[in-house]
Image (cartoon, rainbow, N blue to C red):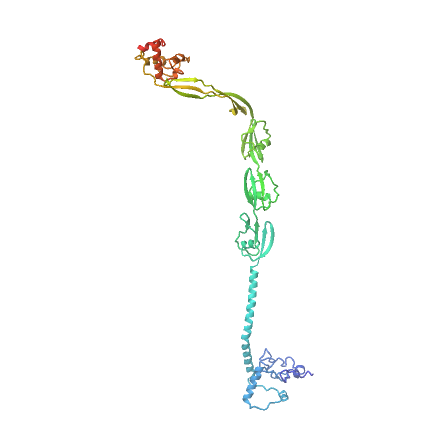
Length: 480
């Protein structure tokens, strides 16, 4: 195969002829004379008159299909139909240039380009939509993903989440959060990439603080942290657990006694101490004061000493004393119609009983206290007194004694007072009867205890028996 003639699939092209490998022109001699940056491609090429024109590569036999068809129609219109030319003749004869071939080629190229553009767009638009959808979905996916730092009870980790807010994040992570737990930022707060969320679980603490018991909650992990969180002053305080002790989720029991100022008065001296004692007795002992025997304090020794409290130590001495005390007897009265009204007769005298009582005697700081009864024992039971009471009406007069000045006698003897008794206690009543005479006249008991009318009646009876002699100084008043 020579370098002069190349294989032409379209016919008898000598496109590369001797001009390509043999007599190809040099640069500057027209090789690219009217090339793509001139008025045509490679001289008078296909965008000129449809061939390579007069270029020095040899004869141009290539024609596009649309140009071949156009040329065929033109020839059939200009020349009558002749017998076909042999292939050898066609190969030997060069293609004759046509008038207007270059413009026609341009128009045909534009028609081909416009006809292929819609099909190309129809193919490209769905592909572009798919690419845009995938790119948008990927962008949205990347935009929704957030890198968040989550710390749960001090354990920190970084995670990726699609949660919009703190509540969703907590729920997605399966964290059970209660009323005593702390979530920061607050639930419902919007999340952004780079945010930090902290969850601290609450722990119950059964706290006894200076004697007051209560249940509190803390998110601290240690006793020391709980003290700071609760605002408890721990300097000098008693703690039932170490400050470094960890608090489990179940909580713990914690007894705290803070340091307090207590003043103690004892044996004439005053002592002020700082103490975290649990009882008054402990505080007194810390002050160097001993309680002996029945000694006690002004408040119960087992009570809790308060800050600023003043206590007094009481030195107590005590003894016991037994006393016998009387028990009064009862009086039983029975009515008697044979006795005048106002008259009582004792049939059986009553007798007092006796009880034995034991008392505790105390002296506090040298001062005697009121005795305190410890026990009582009855030694002798009392005996009831029996009395008859008269119900018979008294006579209004006594023959031989009416008409006398009995009121004058009464004023002279007793000043007119029926219940008076003389200084010796022997005589009593309006007319100063002695008890023996009174009872002999039918009276009962003592005369000064009887009604005034009865005393006048008994005086009249005595006058009938003995005249005015029973009243040697005032008897003359009866006739005055």
